[in-house]
Length: 76
Ligand SMILES: [Zn+2]
Image 1 (tube, protein in one colour):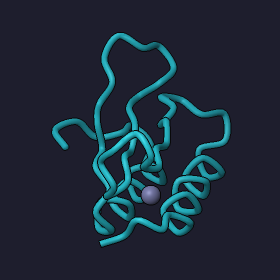
Image 2: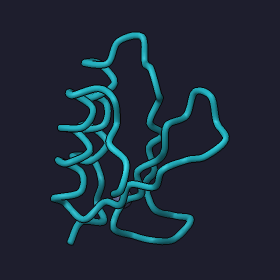
Image 3: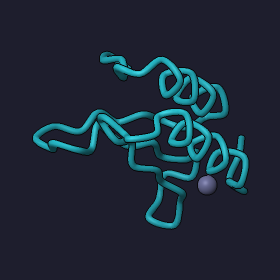
Image 4: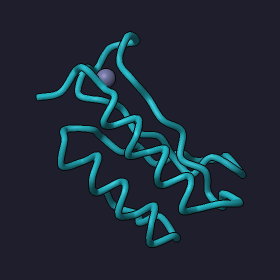
């Protein structure tokens, strides 16, 4: 990942996802979507999570990232 998310809690959640084989893809040209996380199953059936640039509740957004990672059944 070349660019870091501006919010610390969300950066930590992204790192949590990446440790479990998820990939972080930086979006371009979106005002509200910072990027997305893709689960280890790299197919349309895999899980994905859209990362908001400036979520109104960053801690809650970070918690949802971790929950999505924990619920993924496609782990390494
Ligand atoms: Zn998955």
